[in-house]
Length: 230
Image (cartoon, rainbow, N blue to C red; front, top):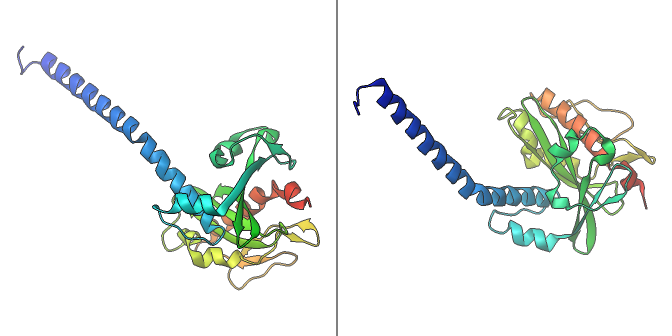
């Protein structure tokens, strides 16, 4: 075949595209289990940070098994749902049109003989999704710890929600005031809000801070019925 012909060029290009596509597909499939494992490890570390326990990629599995005593899943009515708590994808749950079909995970951590309940959160920041976990003490009201993550908030500004400095502000705050669910407000530094507990937002990260504020209320409100139960 004439290597200078258009036919040769077309066949050669087609064959190369097929080879590259097959190679990429094989690589993606080969790495799928490793990617899933890394995602699971990252999720474990986030949940552990929500109860003030630090871990590494190497020991997260072991610490998670040691600290997380049990898990369960509820719906917005506070009823138990037969689902795997760790497998719950909050992004997918929020997309379900029927709220009654949505499921919410609860992770029960046992630390020094005390139970702490970890709940999942998901919302929207300035540039994309934000999410996190927050734990409460056995009174189901007092925050014990929290952890926040983001997909693409601005470094040095909105991305500061992922720092211990920000998450530590929530410890000791309350979700209910006089028996009424209020959530925790995120306000501009130096400002205050009446009738509920609050923390300072990120300086220069106003939209991200508002996103966290909205996420806290919308995500934790669905746990309200369960949190209110004795």
